[in-house]
Amino acid sequence: MTIFMFLFFVCVLIQPLWSATLPQVRKSIALPDLYEASIAELQAGLSAGHFSSVDLVKAYFARIEEVNLKGPALRAVIETNPSAIATAEALDIERKTKGPRSALHGIPILLKDNIATIASEGMNTTAGSFSLLGSVVPDDAGVVKRLRKAGAIILGKANLSEFAEFRGNLASGWSGRGGQSTNAYFPNADPCGSSSGSGIAASIGLVAVTLGTETDGSITCPSSHNNIAGIKPTVGLTSRAGVIPISEHQDTVGPMARSMTDAAIVLSIIAGPDPNDNFTLAQPPIVPDFTQALKNDALDGKRIGVPRRVFLDATDTDISTAFEEALAVLRGLGATIVDPADLPSADEILASNNETVVLDVDFKVQLNNYYAGLKSNPSGVRSLADLIAFNNDNPSLEEPLGFTDQSILIESEATDGFTSAYFSSLAADRELGGALGIDAALQAHDLDALVLPADGFTTVPAAIVGYPIVTVPLGFFSDNVTIGRAGPETVYPAPGVPFGLSFLGTAFSEFDLVGFAYAYEQKTRTRLARKAFPAAIPKTQLIDVVMFTQ
Image (cartoon, helix red, strand yellow):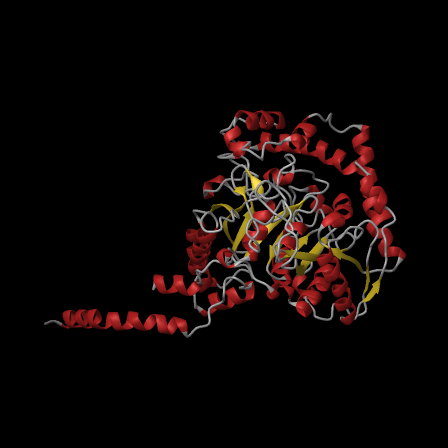
């Protein structure tokens, strides 16, 4: 017997023994629980070699498979990225040879399906509409370019309210392509919208972090309903280039994550100027490292106002009780609560139709430009008028029972462009939301920020002036709350469904707002007080993937 044959037989004999010890070795390493895993925990495990980015992608794919269309059928994810594993492999090699590029190196992120990714990667960008299935965008969205440069892995596209809830009187979280997405905290509960899938996916660890977009409430409300942290940035802090639009005056892209820390990490990477979005060229010259705002004493000595009139006139009992308790927490953290600190323009904003006028005009002009800018679109749709006709011609795809309305599209198509009425409404919105609204309250009471429950009318003043909102978990509906009807297939309120707390400020005040939200989040740890209902919690963990791949 040659020495080579001898060694071969030795290897054959000891291989089962070595394989049998691997699970024990892996079990001795505390791998992060993907339901709550933070970016820092994932990076620590990747750097230590406990698992790879390939393992992470496979684990998230398995978790999506468990609950997206099977089991509770949450329908949070429209599609996964067929290139994600190959990207992860390349980033794993780069980590070993050159080190990580950033805190997001090798970290999977899910994008709302109105944020463009190059078609050659294998994913669609559709805003949930079959009218855009197979369309070829000219380039990655501006925020996607920043994510890729940072080494993030695009895991897939999240479901949303179709066209970011600008189609008609339809239930939040429904799209033709994705169907009705639902909340993980109560069966068939409303996830809110329009960044519904982003909120659901982040809430139960289908991915590390997600991106959403907001025109009016679309990051804030799903963050609130899904027990997560969300940052709606000032319009112009993050690029909207390559994002299927509603309005350049109100659209913004921001992070949705399980913690304010993770949201701050993502915002620090996606913020900054983009020559393809002129609004971003007006931002302050230096983009802050928002993680530097994460201080437990951020509220100490600060003045926080409560704009009660209009905003708190008809608040649910569970929410109002939790909000009053939150004010006590803020006081305990050293803040002076100025209550009330009303917005002078609150009643006028409530009665105004200005926002509708602006959004209807902007949507038609900008959506037509988006369709015209596509390299190709197999549906043949090239305008808003074409879209309306496409929906009517394809009712099985776009107008199933209970989801037929497209009144907003029709209303927008009927507009006549940039008229004097449009410019008057735009100017009035800026004044009502800013100089006579948020800024007026801040200045009159020498405030650092405003605070309100996230739901309801809270988002409107900030929306019409383009100001930021930062949201963290506040509480949960009681187990005996009366279950209400939200849509044909969804309910709200419902037992155990979360709701959030929002901090509002003037333009580009995100750094301060992140700090205030973080201090409250760390003191209360509200997110950890309740989990999703059992069937909605995926069982796959990293250990399952790591053991299988050894």
